[in-house]
Image (cartoon, rainbow, N blue to C red):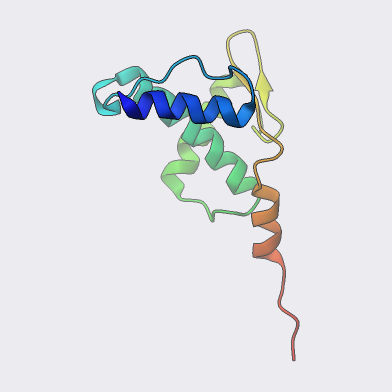
Length: 110
């Protein structure tokens, strides 16, 4: 119980407001809905990383990403996505651009 209380207290102190109302710890393997949400978030994140050149692209992951994009009717998740059933917000301060720039930056030749 102390972990949950400390997590909430530290998070809210960092935000200087009540940003987190509660914390509940449980085994995610026992919750199918949480597993599905994790899969969707992973696919969306993979699409963003792939388009920024952070990952090379595993075929089975690309197949899942393409299936999701096709079902939602979008070409990419880079700028987020919204329709009547689904809303994706992409944090522009995620640091992915910094990682992509570091990977593509060439070292000066001597």
